[in-house]
Length: 141
Image (cartoon, rainbow, N blue to C red; front, side, top):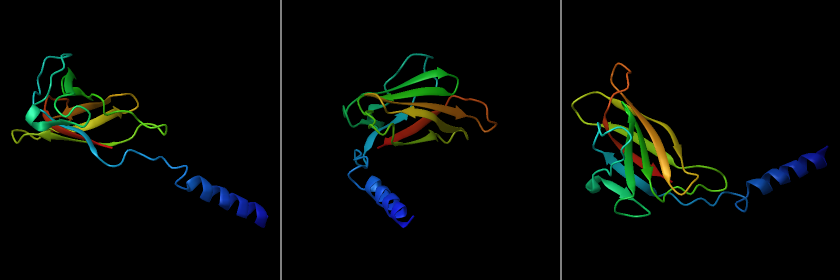
């Protein structure tokens, strides 16, 4: 019984060692943007304000925002996906922008497994109904 416990403990230590750990990409901002056009035409991507937009793969440009319905958006950052063999990763933050209302936004889902990073954002009014809103978004890996 003691031998089995020692073998199991050794196996756990071996599997937890850095040799088997995901090497990761290091912590770095991959993209950020200010989605400055809350009521863009549905289904038509636009490039957010270049002054408040960054993309680690292409520096200038590479980020698009597509309004898919009232208060619903898809953000794409070209070239900064590339999830590891361990699956998708990263950290996404979104915040409604503007003092004119009390809208709020939430990340619904994001994908990093392909070449591009994409995220679905939904924004709501204070009553909880979907509402168009400007927002800031940041993706860090």
